[in-house]
Amino acid sequence: AMLDDGAGVVQLVVGAIAGAALPLLAGVAQQTDTNATLVLETAAADAEARAAAAEATLKRYETELSAARTRADVAEKNCATAVAAEDAARMELGAELARERASAETADAQLAKLRAHLDEMRAALAERDADLEALRAKGAFADADAGAGS
Image 1 (cartoon, rainbow, N blue to C red):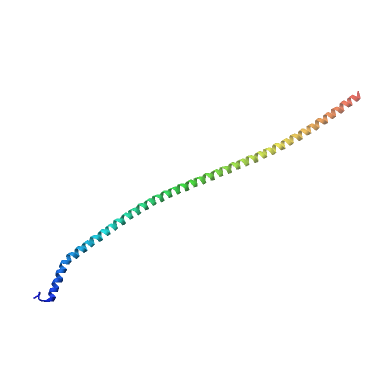
Image 2 (tube, rainbow, N blue to C red):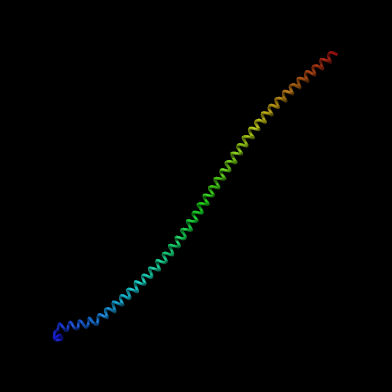
């Protein structure tokens, strides 16, 4: 009865085609899934490789940055040490200059005292010379007077 029915035959043929096509479609779908999986796995592996390379580059940059910071810290400390040494040298030179100025002032004061003492000695010598001349003049006068009286 089903075979006589045209609609039934169509259903049967469609069912047979569909029954035969389903495993075929499933195979295509499975092949498509396999291809998609391969594509995704390849893309994922590629992304992981790029991420690993980026991470290695980042670590290299971090290492270089750390080394640069260390060099900058060392340079800053060296600069501070040099500035401190320069300041210490400047202070030492300033102290030496102050000592030399004080020594020069002391020498000037001593020289002034010596000049004053020398002036006093010259004045005393001039006074003695005058006294000596006065004595000589008196002695010559006395000799002349004694010679005239004899």
